[in-house]
Length: 574
Image (cartoon, rainbow, N blue to C red):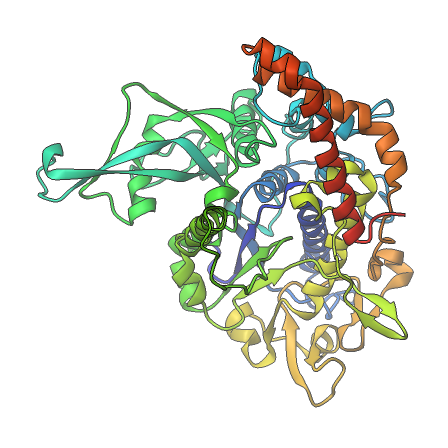
């Protein structure tokens, strides 16, 4: 039985390549804040309201993470969040854990595959993958990504997931299926293929729950249900999760695509989710119990998968939706701010460029659930995006670049651990401000939406105003109260107990010496380019001999100039 009085959360995490460190920081702070609040409530419950030490400033309403949907880097962070919730040893990154020990977010996104002997970039530039496969499968060596996944997605000491996560919690990872799934659409209702037409879908998703008393492992018996229940004490189930996670993050060409095997029974249930009903639509699958396909980055078709997340949330919680006791949070390191809709040129290159942009824009416009998302009630949809401010002439202004990992289409984070550490901290800082001053309900709707009637002590501690600190401003109440706050209205925080975590400061914007970068990686980049050329031209020996050195030098020059230009434009060079 679902908790009908709780406030339900759907969290969507967009793709971001290495800038996923930002999303990881957001989720780390969110879980830590929920955990602090839950512990405070548990103490109150154990004491009872009449106990002399009962803390009357603690709001006792319930908030549950019910659905998480993610694409690419956001898909990785969705999987990491699921594992963090189920891991007894998980520790948040904070003043008491500055190295991020036992923090699956920090270890996966900041430390990555760095070791004392080599960096993650060193490993991405190695050539052993070319020898292993005998062909070029990606520009970068993804062995490093595999090692990160192996360390993160493994059997850990389990715990029952906290009360702030639903016992029917779903995670949804998008994928781009290069093989595609054919569907026969019958127009005569008799199932005669000659009277129908075949359409092919290349988008898809993996949907998982955790095994518990309500859900047994595997595919549910009901044909109307489309998800897989994981038993994370089993290596086989962790392998399923790892394969799905790596497949949603397989940035095309840059990182290796992934072959995925799933049950054909899972695919047979797709029509309900793709077409709202299965009648008259039949998946055309090869014979056998297993369906295999080559998968690349889920962000190609659906980089911001709020539609499918919202669909599942509505399906599970019709009463919550009806009574507005829910919220949808989008975490997007790269929200689209492009307002340019000018006409393209008429030459062939301009037409090609315009065509690619049109195809991508139309895919994003057509994504499932967009109309439902736009139709959400007031203060039910929210976004967390990177915001960094610097002081210039006594005023706080936005710099040109918020994130260090953003340049080179989001690959810049692979160049430096400092870039990733900065973005992780920025994610935590932005989440702190979001929870305190944005993720809120209007004061007159507290009882209806949160199912509590806050006393004056609670209001005094957590209520805030818009405009900020305006006694006559409109009053709001945070959906997730931050226990580090003493008085939210004028930003009084508990530094005595929480220290620097009470008011997170952004790390200094990192700077990189391009001379040192080139000194360390020039030879390795050229060797990687040269090896790729060798394998691409291995059956064209004469052409290879004539062009090898030119291509390697020209390729390195392009890489060098691109990196230097983009780091310089984003104020990341010393």
